[in-house]
Image (cartoon, rainbow, N blue to C red; front, top):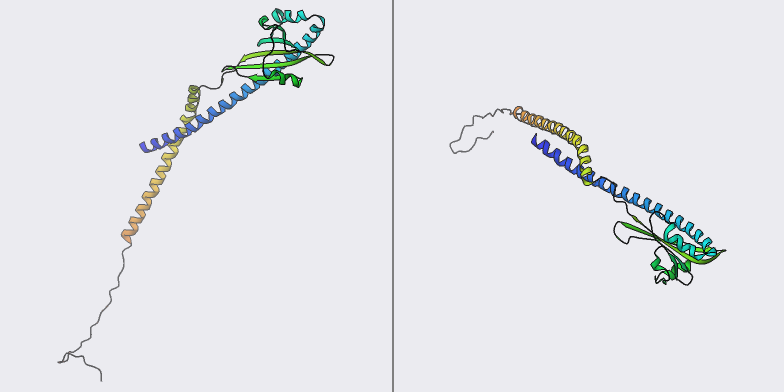
Length: 239
């Protein structure tokens, strides 16, 4: 009985370990998929907001440049927006949500390459662990010509893995493996009893055959002829 329990326990632990690893991998994959979907949605939202801002800025720049700065300074806000600025064709910031940037020259080494594309450019990075930054650079156009550039930066917290915790996975594996252990113990016990019974029957059969299968011998009759010995010790030959 103890041997059955030991074998069942070892088997259950091995199966439970593989099940735990499978659940963990599943949680990781699902978490990555959720993060990818959330990031994609955030990028699409950031691009849509940037396009709307570029359109609004194009109309404002034609009428009154000061209106762009006023909107950035206090009125215009959107969820997740960390920084916004409008850059002229001379690479100078003339409107920004942070007034300290106004009048500064863009020193970013990649700015020239971005401008050369003359289209919407989206840059994603993670400045700190657990934080996603999306920067959208949008051309502000009037009558087909680019008159300025809008650069909007959005920051959001990355979703932490909402999957099962290690304790929850262990509890789930435990709930699954309890009936498995009972089934294995019963199955192994039955199998061992059958194997033992067959072995005992086999041994008994061999012993019985060995006891009943005695060799039979036929007693041969040995006749001795009455040979008369000659005085000289020789045998008598027939004439």
